[in-house]
Image (tube, rainbow, N blue to C red; front, top):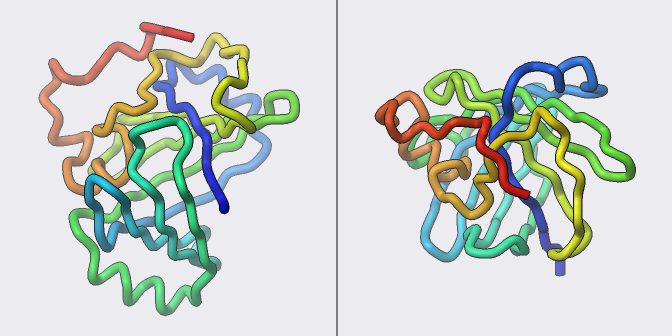
Length: 168
């Protein structure tokens, strides 16, 4: 069964940008979201689309089922969404045999930049680059399904954490 094991961090500075080897424009919307799972539709580069079911982020390891669908069908499904459409550019930064995926959000979530790294197992140790800030793994407001319902632009400024704070 397909699982995703990932950690999420805030990003500080822009030093990471010189390390990017790929970028993708993404639009996604949530058809359903509960305390058990979310169902999302995603369009990448206006040329490929997927329908994804993910278990809720209560642990590092999450069930993730993803299916390709026609872009036209994805566009129609987006009209059935809950909340707003998530708009972001995903930047890939290689890190040994792993890769950081850095999402720079736009639209209602402009100003938020989150880095994710997928691990092979829950106990895998990683070295954090100096541009990685505070870890937000498991903090629901930073997950896309939450950002669709409560965009970053609506957060009170006092709630926005300092990306400088780190924990390994």
